[in-house]
Length: 362
Ligand SMILES: Cc1ncc(COP(=O)(O)O)c(C=O)c1O
Image (cartoon, rainbow, N blue to C red; front, side, top):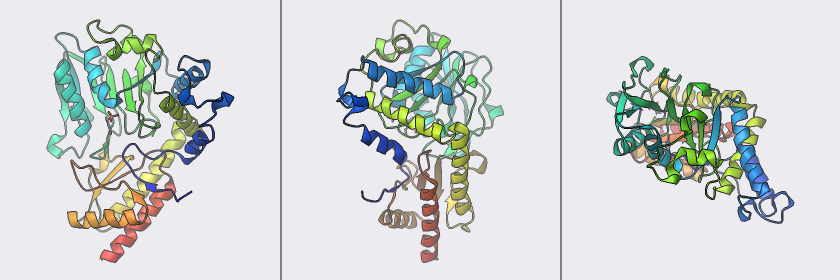
């Protein structure tokens, strides 16, 4: 096999090598069925057992919160941006959104189209480089929910703690940091995440939701976009993305092997500290973008003295096998996405490369 890349892609992103190898081993003949999992009916016993196992495993990793269900939906987190207001905002209500960056803005825009949207707080005045103070977050009186983006993938910011939304359901887009650290699911009414960063390949979006919130969706929205359709049919109303769900189950097994969320969190904090310490200790050659208290342990954004130098950095890094270090086209700069599956060795190698690059420029 050719050498694996040092993969810092923002999503789709690195997957654990052991998961890829397991999938490869059972790719053609799944559980002695004589078929790949992609070739069998989603109504059959084998697929259903994988599907149910993935849901149970996810809830178990989250401490088996009472009254919560796991749904597998297609259309990415972007479809959740629309489904959430469609299902929850009734006449005279709004969705309240904490505006933390590019993804929060996208979610907010969809709510505006569908029902009504209100900004519960914003860090736009800080160019979205910090998470607003929790005490400044105020949901509207007529809010159907309070929506947060737990980790802004593009700007590289992350909530250190979550706001208390009182009796208003708290909804979180956790696409870029789900299962990266321990947290209390009971604080949330609904959590959603596209799988392609911390959970598996693209193609499936995981929704963890308090069952009572979605027992009955408004009857005037299309069947496939109603949460109660997916709930009543155990996410098998239509053909699910079976291979993606299978991969999610394998990634969840791998997270268990890492010591669950506590084990993964310790590793993630170590990895992020290594990189941020390197940036902070570079005498200004590299500069962290996000404010210190809001730095993400998943997406490390940083800059150099000039765009020209950044270009040279990316080019030189690519030649050494580092992938995905260019910042998002909307903000520029550099970004290392260090999701769960990015091994410590990759970050060590990046840090060594950064040191070497600085020496050659200095
Ligand atoms: C925080 C966040 N929300 C939403 C999305 C959009 O996800 P999708 O492409 O699955 O619709 C992304 C994708 O990068 C993201 O990082």
